[in-house]
Amino acid sequence: MTGLPLSPTKLQVYSWHKWAGVSLFFLAVLRLLWRRIHRPPAFPSSMSVQARQLAHLGHWALYFFMFAIPLSGWLMSSAMGFQTVWFGVLPLPDLVGKDKALAQWLGSAHLYLNVAFMMTIVGHIGAALKHQFIDKDNVFDRIK
Image (tube, rainbow, N blue to C red; front, side):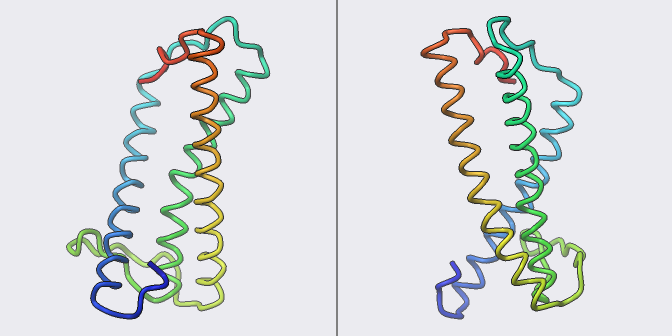
């Protein structure tokens, strides 16, 4: 996306990217509300205290990234002086003023947050598969 030459196509791809980010942010808000109202079943009794702590940490890390990534993108767009307009209809307020240095820093933060999020997702999937196929402790029953 960043390597495309300036063109209507590049602007459209950026718009789609922003629409996806804002949509995922709102879905994360809904997910957090759902999670608050609907408590998951307890961890399997066979899980150690350390494993339960790691599971909690992993879940909170996933939530952190679901909020931090779209917010860093929105902040970056604001700092670059480009307003975010959700689906080309709903203009969102700029969160910060135009600031080139801040925009560059936020661009790096946005990238590194995404990389860390992908690593966390891979770890989460790996842990879930371990519980399903090695421990066979029905941890998938907790998915809601």
